[in-house]
Image 1 (cartoon, helix red, strand yellow):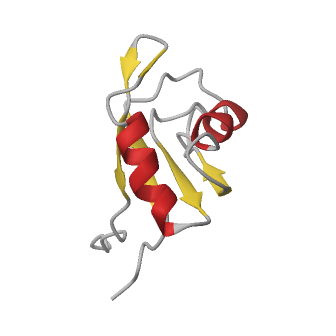
Image 2 (image 1 turned 180 degrees about the vertical axis):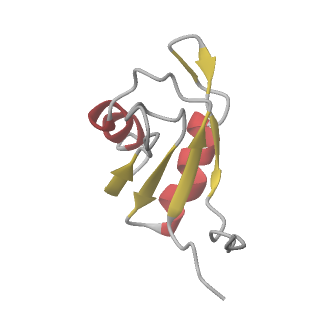
Length: 91
């Protein structure tokens, strides 16, 4: 079983939100290890969600409490612990 560990899923992000903005926001809850905002393969534009890896497991709970439902750019963020990626069938 793959462990998602200290990773958070951040959904419903404004499409304009940058990695630095996401980093700075979550740094308020604790030390951030990394930030990843997936982009669309074709357009290169952000897909409206991202992942934040926190250094301390306690910061995960803190970040969820602080930012789940937090309004950024008129959108309420959805923040929860990231689940391991499910394998997709190959066609």
